[in-house]
Length: 440
Image (cartoon, rainbow, N blue to C red):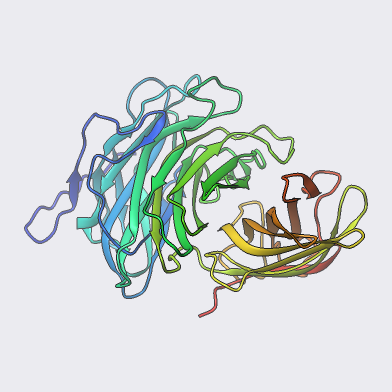
């Protein structure tokens, strides 16, 4: 498609940005951006797949907040070792604006005919993003193999004080069957001063090229490990082109315990839960980190549920819960099974709420359908146990809702496993799981 070049320069308005240079900030690892990152109260993000264009990026900025910085990213595959398309068009109800970006990752060899490139542009001056809901139309992206997607990260100030904010970006490739450096991503560690009180961090992540459900290949397993305060939380199978074909954007809320001084996040191509499908190949494009004493602005919502499922040994497992996507209290989760076994969650440690492309949740009552999280608690009254879980609201009347989880005792032994494998699909035998919009 021929691109329309729109250039109008004045002291008051700029519709063309050129910030290109040929030095990649991070290839086969995410790196610290070569541009200054603004201060603010928090970070929100949105993204879209670009296999079919135009794409629409929806990003919600808290009401009354001031937008301090808007970073636009896009990524795609070239068929050979050449940089991809460094221009993209973006609009928000007005004429499209051509933006030229900086190459920050790649071109890097992934597999035959696939050389990813990642670009970034600071588009703050365009004034396209304001407080409230923003629907940004992106178009005109051309890569010889695939234009995978685009996303924006927005740093805002809502008057509650500055958070500690950091951004990492580039191109970091991973697939279980490839040798290093394409086997695993490089862990990203964010350091911060210790506090005598627990805090909540918000992590926004961009991934490209997950040919999952939206691409017709079904769920391709992945794992994301988050380590803070000596505790490792594992979030399984989040990547599934949840923001449109070949693009994933989501925010993870993480509890930072008192005394902790760092958080590390790393993404893996692997099948921890024995789904049986080929693990996903992907390109980790960007990560933002924001830490402040107050609850961050991320994906809002909560999930409630009750009822039972069965294990492979035909043991009934009952559970009841109320949990929040941004970790705000109250968060309750109680699981009972067998002869007097109990797990009582005392702390929701990490949470991410996503809208799965495989689920047609009707009637729709919330902006998400899948709650993936980890927590710590009591196993038969013994402290130090932990849980990894995925709860899915697949619509009414609840017969297709699922509850998958693993519970580990204080010594790390697996004591309960309801995984959603073909023999135990984790569909509720009784009860219902319900996703809700957040309370006002």
